[in-house]
Image (tube, rainbow, N blue to C red; front, top):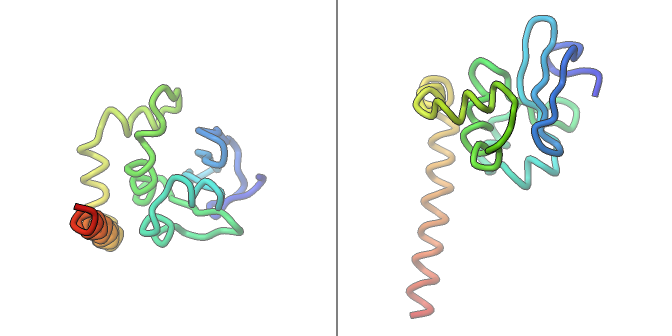
Amino acid sequence: MAGSPWGTIQQSENIVRGVRVVSTASHSGIMVSPQSAHKYLSEAARNAALRWNEFYCFEEDCDAAIVLSEFVKNLTGTTNSIVKWAIENPVEISHSLNTYNSEYLAARNAEMKQQCDTLRYHMMVNS
């Protein structure tokens, strides 16, 4: 991976297979492969991503909170500073989501409500 939507990648750290924190001369973000996006991220998160080539991209300032909020439970034990910060600062992640990603939050809440409604329905049918 030589490029990103933010320019030529100068540093790249693989968090888990298919999920990378990348840095360019002026910016950074998180890039997620299609396979990892479908494995780890909700439809709402995938829809909120900037698509670049086949990757789902989340820039550092506003959108990285989306992937970090959904993915952080899978990243305990990481040494990456961005991920460690997210684990240690859930209030800041929540603030970032509320400030910059209200559409994502609304879509995610709708997805979760639908999942709960489906679960309730199956519990009623099977009882």
